[in-house]
Image (tube, rainbow, N blue to C red; front, side):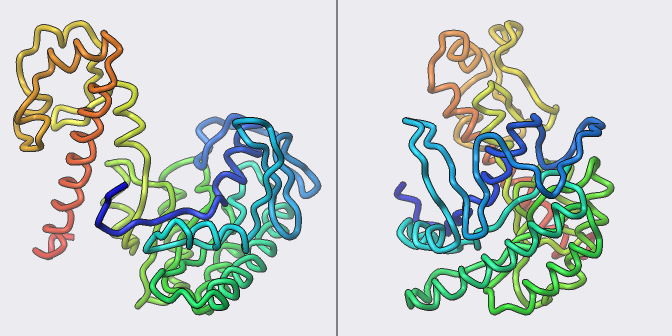
Length: 300
């Protein structure tokens, strides 16, 4: 990659959800619609097999069965050479009932200890290992997990899993967890980071977070700007001889115009996706810098 700055790798725990019950029910980490199909304790996803010692996946390339457990996950992440790696876990679905979530949590806690043992045995001290808090939407399970994971010798903590069916519930759930985690170690929120989320989760005590939104939207022709989200696939932008965002000083806004990027999109040129990705990443990073300045000034 030739990326000389810090890197994180995830463990594969999210794919236990996304390629399992997430795919089966067409849902994400935040439940957007009411759905009565609860996932019971004995339920099994169609495309993966969750076992006590790990998970069997199917290769998207040739359908071959692939196994990842805590040992395999740590070894893969160590070989990739990331600065921060994560313990292997099961990210539970928002439809999982209490019994399923409790049973899943026991596996996640067991896997967390295996991950620590594997990393210790390998003697790699330069990579920071984060444990992951699960527990779904259930307060007692979230607190139980935060206490258990928080007492283990991890270098930091990831807050994972589903976050209910609206952002208000998510904020409440973060407070449950953060109150139980050691204050002197970093806390990372996994898979959340839309612009409207950022200030709230930072105020709640989250130190770092990750989200695919800037790149995900860029690949669909969307630019984030001070005017809001712009869909550059719209024909009207062929006549706009102006930067994506007049107040932006990223390399894209300084050198390219809306009409050119719109033309590239309509011509099916990959360069458009690259330019929008660079701009969106700059925009999001600048947004976080502004929040950091507010913290320094005591405004947050």
